[in-house]
Image 1 (cartoon, rainbow, N blue to C red):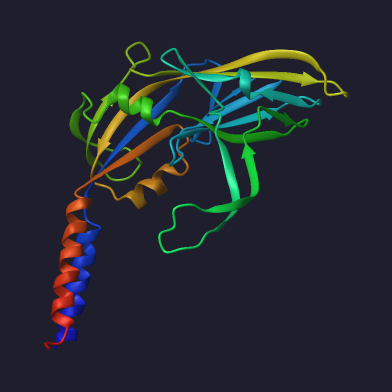
Image 2: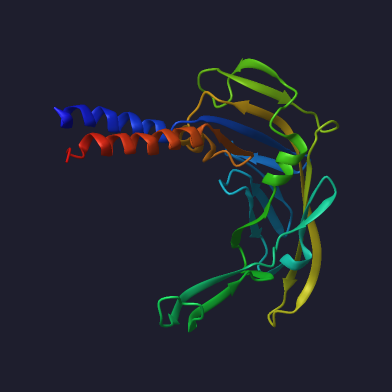
Length: 272
């Protein structure tokens, strides 16, 4: 009898642990460049004679993914240390100066109250390169500047739009708070400055230029009627959009789960 009772109880406790109100904030970015082409209903591509660039804003980390394509028959050098993205005029470099440590750590010591240890680290340190070499008629991709915090600070969690039934992802209309912006009144303006050089056969620059691509925030949406998994699926092919999610109530569910486990333990434990 106890076993029959515990199965639904454990199910309810697990559901409580992972319960919470998820609120999604979805931004749409519109290119300001007349030469930009909206390709495959997923991204804006700016193509020049030598270099083509596009931005993908839909990464879950908040980083902007940049694709750079070499249209020439010579190698191309992208100088990331002299490239940047500006957010409302504030420059944010493509390089954050951080490095990644990978390897193993061995420590040695003795005694019950161990206060001092000795050991060694074996592995490698990987830093982000300052430059990229793109062979002729090839492309390179990478994730760089993170604009999530800037978006949260400049727009916030309480947009000035109205709650309406709106068809956002070409499916059924959902209840959401929608705010639209024109270029002139948009709260966020983005511009990327890509420093690049065409190289000769000795990898020496023969031509250097800067290509820019600009965007503005064209809509901002607050949405609750969607699961996180469904949102990720919708965002996967929409590189001109970005999103982040706030979950509230998860702490309460966790406390209910822990408290319930104590109760289950009391039920299972046989009386002495």
